[in-house]
Image (tube, rainbow, N blue to C red; front, side):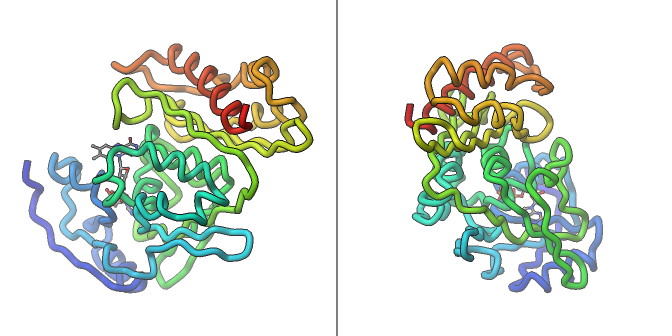
Length: 285
Ligand SMILES: Cc1cc2nc3c(=O)[nH]c(=O)nc-3n(C[C@H](O)[C@H](O)[C@H](O)COP(=O)(O)OP(=O)(O)OC[C@H]3O[C@@H](n4cnc5c(N)ncnc54)[C@H](O)[C@@H]3O)c2cc1C
């Protein structure tokens, strides 16, 4: 289908993009890589009168280091994250999750920021960003900025802390240097969205798990962090039996969807199996 007609603006600074959003209010829609937005426009599920393209704003793209933090611009495409040695060395969990997103074409156009703001519960970037304790920087009218913890960023299905007239500008990830990590994604066919996936990062010290982070994809209306499992893993040897016991309750309190790919109970079973696999792989076991 062909989208309804709209005006198109392509600012070159964040300030100009915010001004365009302020000027047009609800009638404006932000365009990043377009991999989710363009299908929505083509199906006329959204009919903005103005599209504000962030693609020419150089300050929004790129990966830098600030001490113990990796700073990823919201407009950085997945492909750049995959190619980044900084990310693979200090936040390997994100590289591994991004490697499972769709296909190379989509990974070249789609952006990390676009995926996070779109907030599809089956999207693969939310769980690792949550598990790694990232912070999200949001810019608003008048040049204000605020920083939101990933724990508070995802509010509901397709809903985040980014409000009308605001832009996500940065994803700030604390370095997890020396941690093992794994993203275990369950799909029936390649390039499919996650039926369920688990993001795990662990730090093993002296033969036992010293710290653990676990994020769940598609186990509710938002990505989830399995904090009880993280706590239960600490102090255990990364053996099959010990990890099996620690992750047994991972699906408690989750509310996964039931659809053609699987019933909610099946997804809960999957989450338990995938968490064990992800933690063991992350620990090198
Ligand atoms: C065939 C197909 C298969 C896919 N498979 C997967 C998959 O397996 N796993 C997966 O995780 N994803 C998958 N995706 C989705 C893909 O990852 C999208 O690129 C991503 O969800 C959106 O990123 P984008 O940069 O294209 O954003 P866009 O589509 O441009 O924007 C998405 C939404 O975010 C808003 N937005 C974007 N950037 C900002 C910003 N900086 N500030 C404020 N608002 C913003 C837009 O207004 C829009 O509402 C798939 C997509 C397709 C088409």
